Length: 144
Image (tube, rainbow, N blue to C red):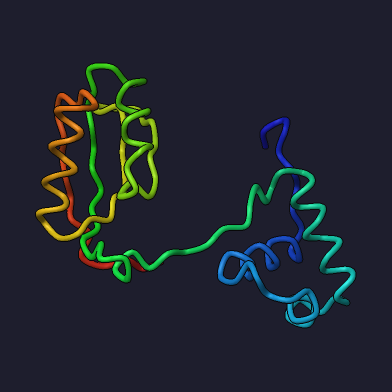
């Protein structure tokens, strides 16, 4: 275990699994699901936030409702990794970006308006952000 890691018990793990599916669940309902009072459940969530286990509460956007119905994972080798990172993070199509090891510098998940939107984004990556090489894999189905 890493020196700065936080040990979790069974209840913490159950709470995290529930919050991963619904971060807006009321503490009373959360407590009922893990057999705690609402106050005890709230205390555990606050501790998980305070210790940094929970970094933020966020939303899951249905990109297709925004007209971005094509998902892809893109591996990128960049001439200048900082320039590419700065540029890619300005694109609303980019849902996550990871600096990775291996043959490429970055791996991204994108949601685009069809193949035309994907092509336009790849063109920006090359022309504006300094991508030397890209490898694109279209997502057919997501399990989570």
